[in-house]
Image (cartoon, rainbow, N blue to C red):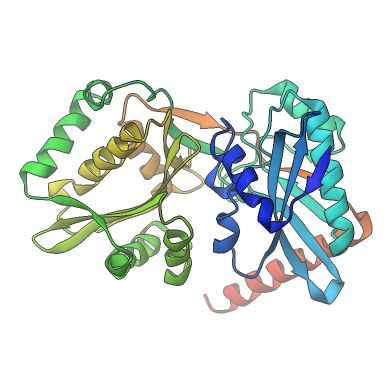
Length: 352
């Protein structure tokens, strides 16, 4: 039985998704508070006893000029991907939602591994299109994440014994040099943002406005933390981290070029991994990495840094699946997006 929930029933969904092994903070109803300019809906599938067995947060991006919309479930749906009945039920709910918005496309990027051939097949059997092997920048969510996947039940001492001797030394060295890693109130966000802007320019990635980062901290007041490492009163590195559904995710990070010799990032990672252990999480997620140096040498360097944590592993998700709801409109939107991209490239080339 499928249901599009009213807002007064969201707590039931939140309990389900926050405790599911495939749950993600981007499937929390609180994530909708972060995505300004998007509508949203929550769809659930229930068993014969009325218990939720699958669900998804759907973000809705309206395109007023074409009287249509894009539907998107970031890291959704949340369910057992071996349960074809539940997947079909949720898709039927999405179709009901699509009728309200005249939506042309439903996009998902589930917590489904690249190696899960059966899960991929179940989605394509339902009518989703799928292109495997997409690279950096070709998907909304990164396909490659570096994670420590076996934290649950371990003490911090056990975890630190597994990170590798060099990393462990650098963690302790940073503290001995006087670096302090602090859990900061939202009022300290400008300290983080100053480093974040510099990091984006240096490493060549797009940065979010400070209001967006503020929105994350406000939307997840109990589940998010702002970490900043200070040395001699100056912020050297920082991170925004979210703990949700048994995972602690390093969502946004930044590091200064100043005083790298005191290695603040190692102390920061030690502190954030410690929060994951304290919270009983199974996974500490360093988040997205670039695994091909040809795609981005600077971001590949971030991957090389993360690989120093010997107890981590590269986790590769299958990627995006598209369910085309209105083929003609989908082609029109794709054409318009390609035209805009081409125009931007032309303007850029004229100014070089």
